[in-house]
Length: 179
Image 1: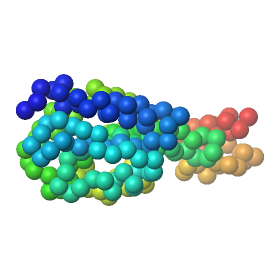
Image 2 (image 1 turned 60 degrees about the vertical axis):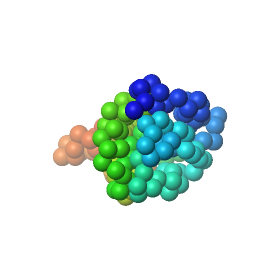
Image 3 (image 1 turned 90 degrees about the vertical axis):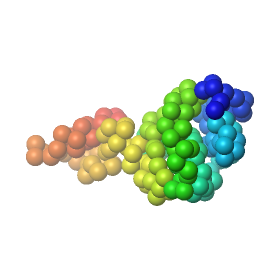
């Protein structure tokens, strides 16, 4: 087994991470895979400029991998935000020993892939669909004003007292933002 610091010796990994984070780069995702079936070393497998669905296509059912994805979400063009997702993929047919090693190797990977809004650990590609990941991001962000009935109707009156606190905060946020 490689010493912990050696699992990320591929110099392309850090550069790919910076590319995904950079607004100046078109790269929106990266995938790290093990160099071989018996190796503990990770290598940069692929990068891409598409969405999370494109990245998910690179994950095999018998593979273990780490991925990092840039996603944009917002309620409208003025509130769009960039969020990052760290993914720990263990395909449904991944060997038990690989899964066990990943449990402690993930900490080493997080020393390079440091900044993300949510972490998704899964062996089910359905959990990596854009809608599912977006929901996790929205929960991590806190308020989700998309459910606010007053959104985009800036002339409406404030919510009545029987509305939830969530709706009241969303109404306040949307209407103050419109000023």
